[in-house]
Image: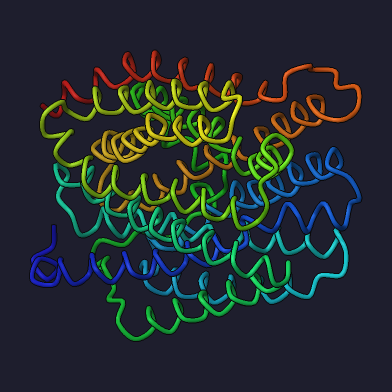
Length: 410
């Protein structure tokens, strides 16, 4: 770690966490109302499930294309300018969606949101710049906690505003993104010294070129598959959760927003408080597998829950899923140099984006087949059970994939 970073490390961590918190709050605000807005514009719950899946896939498709580009740009020009430009663009995008008169405008908004929110690759690279390798699991846990904090306040505020108007949360999201931009402009320092920067190359920055980094070591490739499966299962929530909660339990924007705030609070506690101590006791690999296993159990229980209260109770084991992501990231960062951290995060985000393209289409289609007057799939929770199976497979693969990396760094 550069000597110039050490005296300012704690301040830099605080700056990036606050910026991430505000950015994610702006995204979380629209979650309780976006599917309902899609439903009002499309005309039915079944059509909304398909359209919402398409919109999430569009968002993820742009992430797939743009994440390695933005990661490589941050390796070349530094993290700060990339983060600031992206956050500013996200604010403008929310304004576009706030005034969208039809589904096509919303589709354009989701495309632009996919481009601008690719800055999360730079956020993770920023944390890698200012932490030692043995501290990165905890650092990524702090970022995860900041993200979760945003998803506590964001959906809660979005649920309240959504009771007033389906458009109001989008205006609030634009305001929060604008605030994040101003905050970062004033206080966010650069984390990557000029001597550590790497020349920009389209061979590395295109999404398929970026993925070559993951093929550079067998362990990275295996963990990339685990990462894919984790993202694949997680996109169940963005694709069908709001519609499912309304159709099965009769919950509206306020109830869904409150529930998502609870999910974010639990995740914040897990990633902010548990990751460091659990990793210290069990190691990265065991912690990762434990998180995936609890996620599989929790999500299966959520799909089987006959009542809303049992669904809420199933969120407790599911919250330990938050142990997995920081430890996957930590294991992978140990295999690349400081100048490649941005490229690695871009490649990881591309993997997540591939999952984000196919997963919402898959789960949206499954959900569409599970609802309506004469559903093809007779059980409305089928999508949740399938996601649980995906996570169980990820836990098994993760146990084998993490062995080489943890052994080499022990």
